[in-house]
Image 1: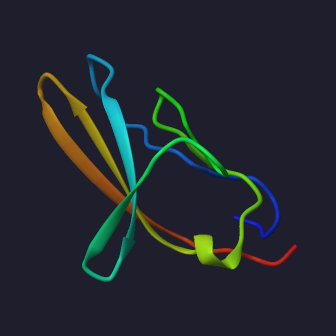
Image 2: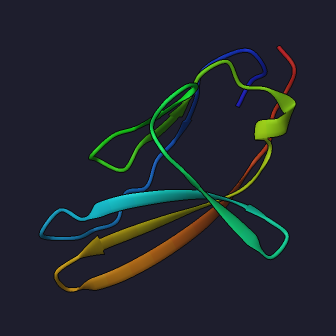
Length: 83
């Protein structure tokens, strides 16, 4: 992600039926759930958009996908680069 730009994180499990998604930012042993609003937009396809990325957005993110068949989690590290 680039500072002051729009950041995009995708969660794309190969799942049928389409799951619901929950995003969290991981800090140490804690996870803070990310909800739509302010700089964050969560889409039903699993995409998380972060508007006006700052250095504080750098870190580990977790995506949880849930459907009738179960729950899957994935994590990724996001780096913030200068313009």
